[in-house]
Image (cartoon, rainbow over all chains, first blue to last red; front, side, top):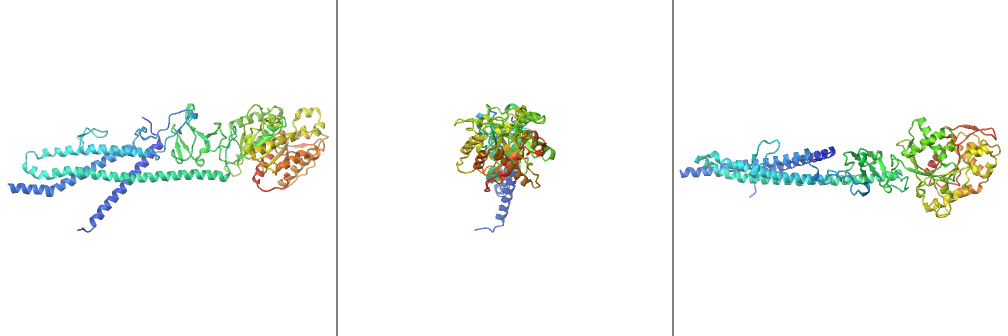
Length: 44
Length: 574
């Protein structure tokens, strides 16, 4: 297998970090949405 | 009994089933997300193969047939999308197997085969055994759990899809931002070069090099990678990864100038540290044996000596060939056996002689291109003459016209045989040589015949040391008095040489022709014996001590005068 050069490893790690940040942001959005929808008065 | 069974079923479906549903949904969702996290982690932090993400450089091939740059594609310009699509696909397959699969195959770090959630749920039926009560109470949550698994899996899939979409947007914005930054960097570098007047020309084919090819410094000698377009782009914004694993800067400010550069037209190696200083091209014009090469080498020797003495690194050889050639000439100059400096080979193509002049990183620094074609080239007649292919004339920044005083009969008549043997007079008529040169020069620059060129010209009288030994012929500086102001002294010296040409050797026609063709003309008298230090010598005629001009003075004057270039000059004599 090809040896992965260090800059590509670094690129991968940054891409992974970006994904973690995106996921965390989405989770926060989902939690906020759930919390918001629970506080809404029931509609008929 | 029936009432009890009905109550049990009611409790099972109304109260316990939702619990089973939510527990199974949460469990399936968590399992699926865990599989996604595992797949992502192994891809982004692992050493997975590079072939599938299309990032690898092409295999080594001869530079002439090279289609693609020998570098890895930048991870963010494509490969990261392949990588992420692989992760999503892999995560879905693993997650699906984990939740619905028959048996999840064993994986590194997970001992033994794992049962999927559906299979685990089916297994819970055995817990009830033959107990009717457990069966009655368990039916609701059992069935609801199956639905919960599907719903949890679906919700987790929807969440990962939403995350993927957001991630793709983040990546697209990152890539678009990188492209904008790359474009800005390229533009900024071009504007910066243009503002500083920096260009680079090939010393062999004499064409302007707009995009030099660069060689990787760490590639194995048998397959050195040549990067033809080492600029910010999809292979890297600030640096790129060569196929050998070495990182190369894409910008001059990042250190690209340290790499060995090659002409993109003729593949010739370009001067070292190219594009760090403006170029200044100086054709040295003269007929045979006028002393062109000796003058050029003396100027180099003088500049090198001054730089070493002041330790200001204001002189530097720009290529190995120039250094080697000077190494051979230095020996002859230091032993004052000037005749042992070999004349330029007339069969060899004209190649520029490159040196840097001026302190490093200063705006005064110039990359000098000296052109020393064989004297015969300037003496050939007709349209097939030697100057037709002198394309470097198009880049001319200043001209040195070397005039051998012993080419004039008035001087030769006053010299004895031994002086003449030592001086080896040129047989070419300076005016003929100059006129032939000007004709070609105007053609290369598309200059109308009736317009004077703004490019400065230095008329350099060589072999001036030999003039001092003549009793019947004056040296140009015989009657020159010292001056406190260097600029005024330069003016006096220039006027003295001009006067000598007009009055002593009767070259009014030559002077008129020169000054009719060029706005700025400076006159100098130099000697190859002053190559390392300026020495005062006694005139045999007047008995005065006379100091010739430094051999580098014409070059310094040309650079200075070219800086004033566009200012209109009165009939220039400097």
